[in-house]
Length: 102
Image (cartoon, rainbow, N blue to C red; front, side, top):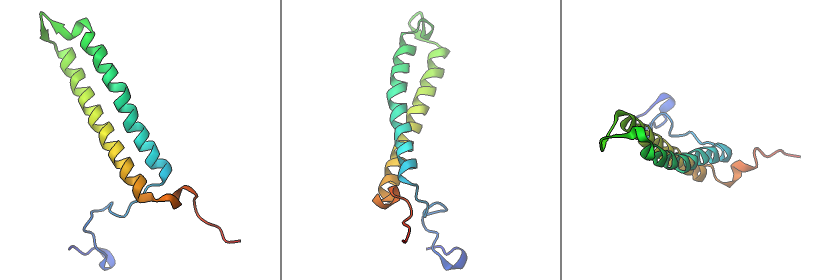
């Protein structure tokens, strides 16, 4: 175990103690889901585009868009997973905000 400043453990890395609110966690989940809803439809449109194939062989147009789509789906999946983990870590109390004493 590595010790950081003031003797605290840094085993989880620099962001091990970061907790997002439920609102930000939901936003990350929504962006991840949005990516998975939009990009497959775009992939179908690119596949059916006449510029995607020349004499039956894939063109640079197709390969560039395949790379873009795969990267976007990977980012979307990562954001959704991080959002889900943050949602669980935030717990139900983070929705109501700080409690005030009367």
